[in-house]
Each structure stands twice: as structure tokens, then as C-alpha cells.
Length: 76
Image (tube, rainbow, N blue to C red; front, top):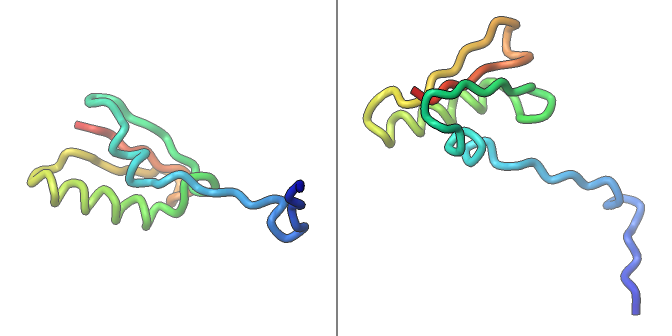
């Protein structure tokens, strides 16, 4: 028996966890994210804030030069 893929689920895309992506950044490295692929900058700011609070210091820093269309996360 073969399983048929319905038309409504054919193009289902699952997004990778933004928190896991940020946590995987090596120390001293800056990574550029595109909001269309990674999610809005507000979500990234929230992740960075939670990770910094858990670390007890500013371990990650987020910046943007184009109003959040792309943003850079740096692991200090």
C-alpha cells in the first residue's frame, strides 16, 4: 500500500528553530539572517534576550541596518 500525498500538504515547509540556529553560532562569529527565511527580527530579538538572560550576560548581540529585513546575530 502506498501513501498518497494530498494536494494541501504537498508544499509543506518546516522552519528550523531560530533559537537552535542562534545557539549553534560559534563564539566570535557573526551570522546574517533574512527575515523571509528565518523569521521576523522581533522573534530573533526575543530569542537573543532569552539566551542572554539564561547566560547572565550579553552573550549574543543582534543588529540590523535595513529595518529588520536582514539582521545579524553575533556570538560574543
